[in-house]
Amino acid sequence: MISVTGLVDALGPGLLRLVAPGRDAQVHDVVLAEPGEAAGQPGEIVLGAGVTDPAAAVALLERADAAGASGVVFKSPLAGAAEVAAAARRLGPALVELQRDASWTHVIWLVRGAVDRAHAPLPGPSGPQDDLFALADTAAEIADAPVTLEDARSRVLAYSGRQDSTDPARVSTIVGRRVPPQVIAHLRASGVFRKLARSSDPVLVPAGPDGMLPRLVIPVRAGGEWLGSIWVVARTAISPDRVGRLADLASVLALHLLRLRAEAGVARRVTADQVRAALQDGSEPVPTPPPWRVVALGNRAETEDVRRRLDLWDAITRRYGWHRPLLTDLAGTIFAVLAEPGRDTAESGTMPWLRHVLTRARAHDRTLYAAAGGPARSPADLPRSRAEASELAALVESGGLAPGTVLLEDAWDAVIVERARKAVGTDPPGGPLPALRAHDERHGTSYLPTLAAWLDHYGDPKGTAQALAVHPNTLRHRLRRMAEVTPLDLSTPQQRLALRLQLAALEARPYESARPH
Image 1 (tube, rainbow, N blue to C red):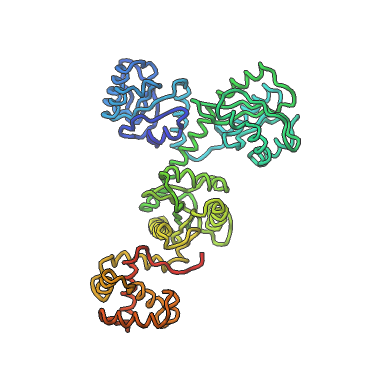
Image 2: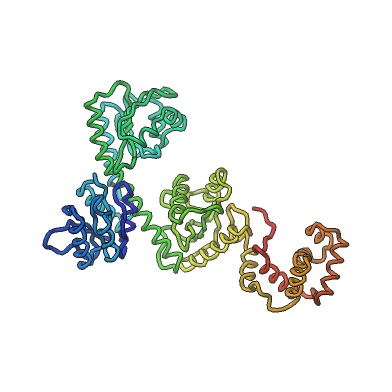
């Protein structure tokens, strides 16, 4: 199932906008409002196709609320009218706005496709992707030239079967599934992407590097949003009639791209919900065989909301070959469930693979990190691995560990000390620390840092003095004066450990052990 919010997110702002979430109920179908009949039922979204004024819109919302419908859709600007939005906020159904130029028939088709994908999120052998290749062939027939269909990020979605009149740039684009960098540079210098993003007019691209032939580019847009483009190898000029027919085909392609995006968004949301449940209590299966590792993914400079961070990590992992990433957000943190291979392999979705990905990504952003909990050999172990990953991530965020790839096995001591530090608290129950802290506060001395360094280098006066940047005689003098302030018994390992944990709890940040990263 998918909620109203999830459905709107999946179809995107080029088509729908959530005005009021209502009870954010689940959706299993979409229906047209019929005069004199109940306005939907639980699990249905009602389309107000014939509603044109605010009073009728409020009445339909009230009927939908009485019927228990999940939501109501009106076109813009009716959905944004003040009285309509106010009614939606006090009623149960969600209020959704449809772009003014969108077709109700297309909405039904897209919503039902997204709902079907939510029930069966795994891609099948056919569907919109196959339709795209058929559309590419149709465009090639119209233009009498080779065609590729690309999204707004210059990724190849489909291409026509005919290969005559082509050039090396098209071959590289098809083989590499994206436009080559030198061609991208040529297109950017020619202002092509700027024109595509701002206008629906066809763009003629001049010949480019490496024998690239001219191109005719037809933008594909929906609700003002640029979704992709039709690229035609224009060895000879394309007649205005053919250009017009290609522009008509672009509107059909826009629906397919919206459906693909919706299905991808639904599949991702379903996966995220499954992974979230598995990490919370081990109640959901993970679609890869054990053992696993739960990894917290973050950025020490992160300021964006959790959804944007989830989008960022989804894009990073997919870019490096993990086509169905097991990602989710939980308690404000992004988590991934990775396979734990029996050998050192760089297969996507494994820890060795993530190390490689993070190394590449950190070349552009040194604050990125991945904190991995211990191996989970059964679903019941996943919440424990997630908790360990969260502890490591907190240490990275606080500065206790350096950003990068951090495994529990490499930082177990820092986790134990941090757990003990939290258990001890910042109010020492006894011992010499209260008196030494009071003396430091009154007289500006440095007895607490001196004691911490002495415990860290116990039995090594020279090392302690170097850590404090003082002369060894100064250290000895401080230790004598400290013993005059309060009895200082360091004769037993237990007392030394207790004192060091109390000091760690009093410090501004957790105890940081020197370790290679």
